[in-house]
Length: 377
Image (cartoon, rainbow, N blue to C red):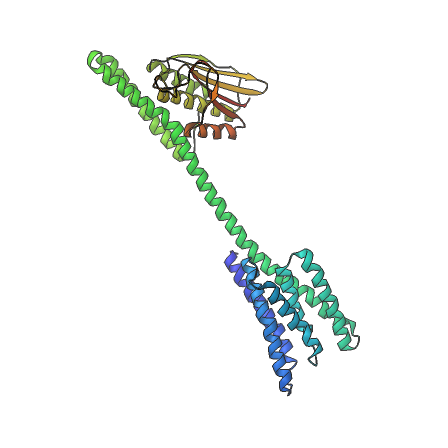
């Protein structure tokens, strides 16, 4: 049952019960010929009904009534003051509605004891009216408890159903946002290297086409292959499925670096790693090499993995950090310094975190750049 349907059901049941109790109380004085008594009954009927409706509506919406102390006081006075003014009293049939209002509006640690007092008072009052008939008194006292609990249960259930639907909608929205972030991260991490490779091989082929057509043809062939891999990457992102191996990604990185004129040294550990950790390190290699190709004038690059103390460590180190050595922001030999992460490093940090690891990026003492990732081994 949806929250709207449950709310309609609660309104129908509470309205029916409230009308029945009110009509029973009103019927006690229906045959009375005293105009003052009839007028008094009409006043107390309005005094109990109007606040009760306001309280139930506020409870269903999960908000505090605008005039809560006043409306609850009016309902209490309209419920119990007539016991001393009308011939047959009034609270005997209306007190259950007041108990429901107490439970709906006040915390249970407060409303519980108050409803207990209402129940005891009701039993004693009815016993006094009936001349000591305890069975009738017990019936009216139990009615206060059951009706109040019923009103509270219906209001609480309808409100919880609404909160559950809202939470479900928020979870769905969060899932959509998470998927968007995943696609954005995968497109950046996956296509960044491929597009960089395409651009580099295209430039290289353009330079070779005049003096070395055979080599240019080879570069164009490899460019087409990289473009096809990029298409596969897009398909994998769309499907939410990607299998990466550390060795395969390292081999592709070495080929790309050497084609770009960067000497590469590789030292991979032979230790078997958990699937999530290996994929995270593979993404680390891809992001590190992409940064080398796009943001540096590196001449050498090393890719190293090791396992120590239950952690697998990846280091991608190159010897020059920026594309412009004359740039004042270029790190000079000296101490190491942390690097403010961009989109790629931020996404890589998220991947490492999902695998239970960490990522750090810093310039080296010789003016190079070091990317380090550690994941559980």
